[in-house]
Image (cartoon, rainbow, N blue to C red; front, top):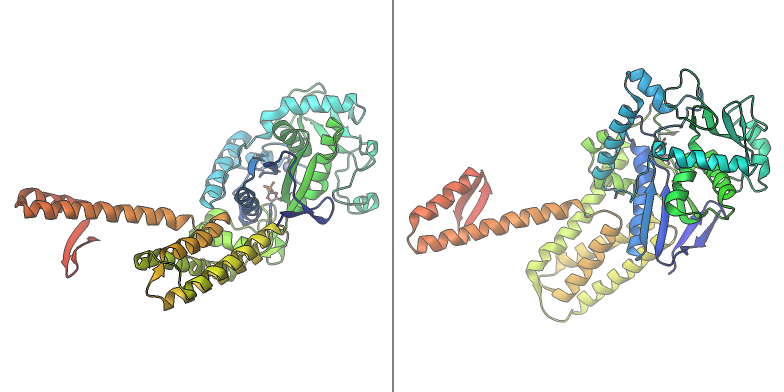
Length: 484
Ligand code: AMP
Ligand code: ZN
């Protein structure tokens, strides 16, 4: 089945066909780094991580750009720079604040098992490109400068609003844009803002010192790293208007190429007590706090239990539920690993063939669900059904065909990994197995030494192992080790 994605632009499911064959260019709006990453961020970035993993599962190579907003994102009420405002409150350099929260953001997302983007460009690293592009827009007559501020003239476009489908009167009623005396039209938005004597983050420009608007940042970083037309652009749905609408306006005005982006993907909000979880609302649970209570993969499972476009309500109960569900999946995986000890080289019998068929069916259901706009809840349902079938089968078997076991194991663990789970235990299992193997090697050496009556050396091994906290116990099944 071909992969289909819901494109906010068309409001429909569309067949996914990248511009360059098996290569996908992806841009996801990154965080404004003035505070800790919270579960709302985790929702959006886990959702895109799952999308990246699924594209890779389907053998696309993904070039993933996710910016860091370190200037120009203004508060909606007082139009202050969010970073500068916080830096002043804390009496620190704005870039000190940025550096701190950016590093912590990466640590948190790493801890959640979210793969890092290929490039994490910072807005302040791209000021020259922004200034040049703003100049170009002025030359083209699409932007105008008044008293050190530069605005984008929305009336120059006949298709403005095509992403959000917002009508001019609705925009005016909702007062969704900043009021400014120098704007020709209320809808026009700032590309460059003049600095006042109090502005902390400012740069030289042909229009005097100032700073860029938030929307030009992402447009420029997207164009720079992914080209004038690329495949997927994402973010949560609050970014549709005005942020993404304005990105389209600027980029298409600059390049003259339409569309700037082929597929616009937007995630639903993570809510808490019926409200969007947000730094500005102060109702957030940080990723750091959540990770003290829940495992990274349980948080991932909780996020994946809802389709990425729908809203998720955060509750402790749902997170606890996700932890239990995750344990069920791991139990099945471990049972398959344990079954290796009773596996035999022979053709699968009738019960095994039946299990193989049922796993194959469920695998197909999983793939179809993921190909249907990354429908993780349905894909998970197939994975849970697979875990049940596996457990039921293994409970009744004393011996299992090696071929069958390998096939089932590859399907089950491969699909889990495609969703970003079954990551933790593996390293742990490998670590434990390695210790087991090394200890066994020492046992064997010690036994050999004793047989050769080299008691000095064999006692030395025992004593040195004790120093590491490993104690040897002689049991009916031979010597065993445990941690002292
Ligand atoms: P910000 O740090 O506010 O610029 O947000 C970075 C990204 O996280 C944007 O795509 C936001 O829309 C997204 N985001 C922020 N809060 C939430 C939330 N509660 N649920 C889902 N996505 C969110
Ligand atoms: Zn953006």
